[in-house]
Length: 108
Image (cartoon, rainbow, N blue to C red; front, side, top):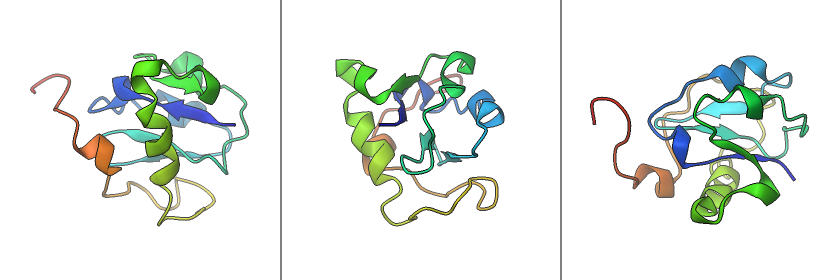
């Protein structure tokens, strides 16, 4: 099990969760953040600091956002396990499901 980032993060990318994560497993895509399922230690530190309440324990992802579970896992299919987000920086892509979402947030 892991934590999942869902729809409220799309086009927000607040990054408070990145600062709180003790194992550097939250990666930045173009439109949202993703938690690496193999690097996450399930500590839960990211969940309470998210200002838009986008982070859920995998079993607790609301039904309307279940597709984000697969998107979080599949985002890493071609990346593998880099062993830390800080050393690779922003990943210039998103999962196709996320990329297809309508624009959100200010200015959209």
